[in-house]
Image (cartoon, rainbow, N blue to C red):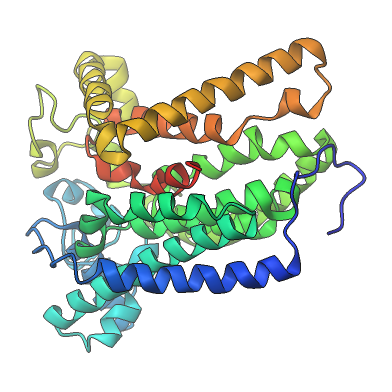
Length: 396
């Protein structure tokens, strides 16, 4: 493996070619065996009538007909905007990535609603199998076979994964992309960000705009530790350029349609949803947009109270994301890594260890940031599923 002269640290263990082939085969076998055992043990859960999947599939249907990014499922609030007053409506409350991904399931199901839902479930199973295979392969590749059973057991018995598969949740594919980004950051090219990482980050952004900051946080806190400042900035620039190439077309479309390249209907409602002034989804059922900036300057108290409730919700329900012993182990490991980093900075600020933000500390910090973000907007543990593969994989 080639290294820049600017590298300041090298992984303790570099996989050999032989180990790479073994890990590839082992990962594929693990994914197949996992699905062979997991699928018969989980009966399909009926869809809720309000499932987000239906919105995505209406967009997919319009795409399949060559009509563009249109949707038939709308909120009354959207009609407050002049560019969204006709049906079918331009897609303004979802990112387009998942609808594009679902075109495969749509064509495989021949457009028949029941068959399409079955094909979506099959697609989600494949994504779950890829997560299993990828995590297993990297554990084997890095000489950690004893961690494989723990990784598989944690995924097998996770209750939220059943809903993610059966209800076609976009968080599953986001979790897969973030897992690939995580593995590349820890093991690929000595942890340097580059253009492939930018592509992965761009695809994640096209699936969930609210995850746009996660790769950037990882690159800055983790990728920075293995490179000098100039080399890091060059590689970060490549990653951001690749990210821009993926996301720019949709941003241009939004700018032309709405005047805002990152327009999202949720930004005019989600923060006040389920507050004392707007209980439940009432904010979506009327025609008065609630801009975040205006709300926080005119009447921030309901939003702050909602945020406190959200933090309490996430704290109480985190054991549903990962078992309590796993959470305690990750928290202990994160604190230990941070303590070592602080001690190294005190002894030698220029040393690589003084700049290294350990993997457990970074994973825990990401989970906390996600919990804080969604405490402001939507109190649902499904949003944290995107970091589940990363958290489970850290337990060895």
